[in-house]
Image (cartoon, rainbow, N blue to C red; front, top):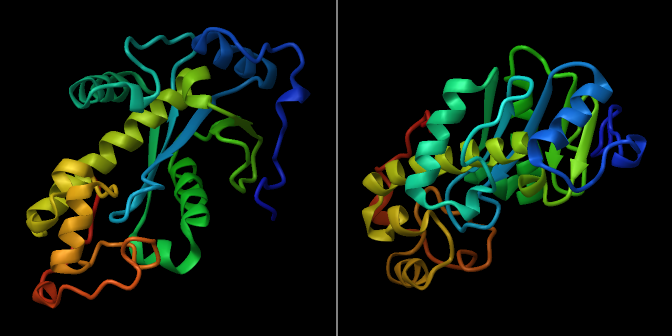
Length: 236
């Protein structure tokens, strides 16, 4: 199966649905066109030098509008936590997929992100009739997928998935900070900040660093952490 999967659909197949409209109405248009449950899927953590990539898939009730749901990057950390709880309370179903750093190094970050998104959708119960995917491509599912560029700004379901993925990953990174405090993961969540790069130069990489990434590649291993292992269950 190619990256779009056998169920890959393009937005032009739905000419009656405007590409720009209210995010709730945007979702409802697709839901009505397909006739069934709609899920939005998004990921967090493609860019960092450390930690997993996390994806979430969310099915919201028909006509549901949740205050504050929008692209997670536009929300403060406090607001994301509040919106996260609103989504959890009102969602029909939520699925989360996680791909760890060693797997990211093995298959590359794009394939890891697609795998995490597929895993998130597979964990949804009930099963959706159609999936809106943030970005330009399908993710390889055996059900209809509609790629939506800048989907976290256009679809409430994708925006909800963005929040769930981001909050889940941030919570994981704060747990990792307790294991590897010298890197400051609670401050930058694994991104390539000046503080993080300086810590890498000083200490070398730790078990959750992505060794294939520029900024980590070629660095020595922090042998002082050889006996410290990351939690087996990284869920929030």
